Amino acid sequence: MRWDERRMDEGGAQALPLEVTGRGGIARGSGRGGLRLPPPIPIDAGTDGEAMAIEITAKTIINRVAPGSRMPFGWTVNPYRGCGHACRYCFARNTHTYLDLDAGHDFDSKIIVKVNAGSLLRRELAHPRWRGDSIAMGTNTDPYQRAEGRYGLMREIITALRDRANPFSILTKGTLILRDLDLIVDAARQSEVSIAVSVGSVDEALWRSVEPGTPAPQRRLDVVRRFADRGIAVSVLMAPILPGLSDAPEQLEETVAALVDAGAASVTPLILHLRPGAREWYHRWLSSDFPGLLPLYEELYRASSYAPKSYQQRITEQVRGMVAARGLRPRSRPRAVEPPPTTGDQLTLL
Figure 1 (spheres, rainbow, N blue to C red):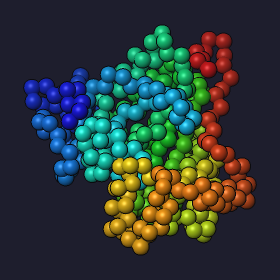
Figure 2: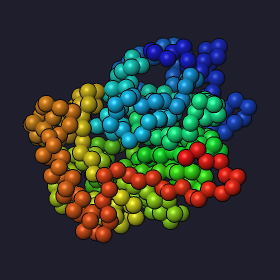
Figure 3: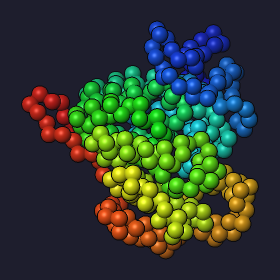
Figure 4: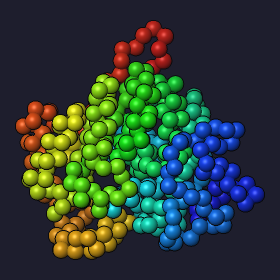
């Protein structure tokens, strides 16, 4: 496996075991995380079994987004690779093949943990060449997936960003972000902070099938409410909207109503896209759970990873109309929380 040379092995044993404390008694989180240690031998792709955490020491943690990308941000931090949320459609699945692991079960169960993420980020933020640009998190795999309950890397990361007054954004489906609510509120007093939660549908049966490792939609909506109560505006990505599964007008109306009632600052509809790696895994799930929809997907996605523009436009306009009818101004992208006014000695990198 690639990155094997960076695994945390010492004399055949893990240097940072999956108990709640690490070297020097440093707390690594209080949740179970549902992960076991892998054997010290190389890990083969495509093997079944319990979920495992593969601990590595990363060489860098702030990553530049490729030039020409359509993403509205230039820098990212990803403390984990792979994701226990196990969303059937996740676009990041193919990135696991870069590690000589597969984009299906391996992506869901072999989680790469960058155990030095917090200390490495603090060092990189202090580098003279770092200009204080905003850093996006949750753009590849969810930083508040189950493994975060074990390792607590995000608390270290947010603390480092807050201490440097560095702006950041977080996109998540994880309710574990509530553990860091006070810290995020404190960071928003220092700089610009943007929080977004992803809820594609409030259909519980569909959620259990297509996003089996995530918190329930209603629990994610509680995250929106809790942040709103503390004065932090939360944008909601209504994503992904699944053709034939969550795109009927009555389904869209039910989801929009729940998002607005929860206090979403904005609602941004996004239609499912199926990149290589995700496409194969998603089609395998469809074949098992909704085989009658395979012809529809073959038609919609036969020429591209994206549904036809006409379909995207129709669904997007429907959602925007529903949002506007409920008195919420629609926006094409999530808006960041406005930073507070600066004072005389406050550090600001904006």
